[in-house]
Length: 490
Picture (tube, rainbow, N blue to C red):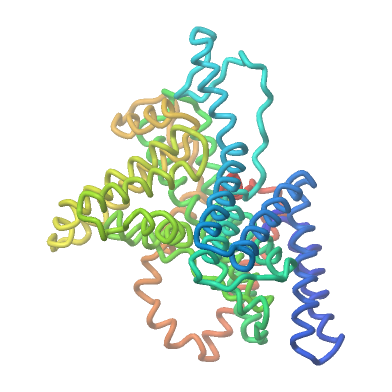
């Protein structure tokens, strides 16, 4: 079920909000009400996830049970450090094994089929199998990477002694499955919401802020991201060798804007929904396209994932505590794993390697050059160009397609299709708006807005914009606009 679907907007969300509000009529004991509300939210979350199929729900339920029991054993049953460590290893291996089976099994079959039958018309880098083994593809459960990492982080934190164990199984199940952040994050660590699960304070102002955030996120997704997606998909569908010159640049620009407004829009909606029910989730984006280095970009993009890898991979590997060479290796490993986490394709491995190499280069020498450069606009152009090239890898179906498009960027006038074919006034207007709203406007007027946001006319303007965005988004959805979320596939 998509946040930007009519069934969610007009049936599921209103029903959950009304039901959640009616629970307050059952009594005045806040602690008891929170318990009832938590059970209600858990039931709603399970329905939300089961909408994609009971099969998916069983997989998530299995993950919840394994990690709950693992945390319970480590925090309460284990009698020694050795027992705790063994239990942690078992739980982590189970989690990673499940991820491997569902995310990487199909890729491994393609590789092995091509090795077994090298002349059967398949391609390893092209991600085409030969069918030699006759195995059916495994369907990837929606959001499995997100809820697996979230559940696994709880067990690791219990092992470290960073959080107390959650003995209430239903509360732990709510932590893992809470529908606002279940499908595509942000990845929420248990210590961030533990107190909120058991004793959150719900305020009208918080709900109002949640509605505002949701409306802005919905507008980003439906009005901007979907427009960019339609153009990017048409360009990528031209096939290898046919995307070059201005068409290649337009496709790259559209996808660069699409993935930002799609994913940050989803995160805005998730954060807004959380606030409607009294939960505060950490920010997941901080205007990444205004960054002046690749390192800064990754401090601003998908912050919850970067933080997860820092806390559970980079620091345990030694971080920057074991010398310069080891620091660079750790950094490289983290970004290789970041690429692998996203999906089973050589394009994502190349994407992770690409960023790993660049971040190592910035740590070694490039970062110092960027810091000393007085013309920061050059730093910004370098960063945005690198990020856009990386998005070509991220978007392409295989390495051959990515290489062909990147090559086409530097072949002006090449290709069989004119860029005019894909341009429209709507797309041009959205590109202009998208560029200005991905950071430049906020940098210029952000401080003024924060200072004046509680003045009457600014609040009224905010309300008008919210209503307008919601109305226009619904009109667009009724018209059947292209509407999937990019990060649902991860």
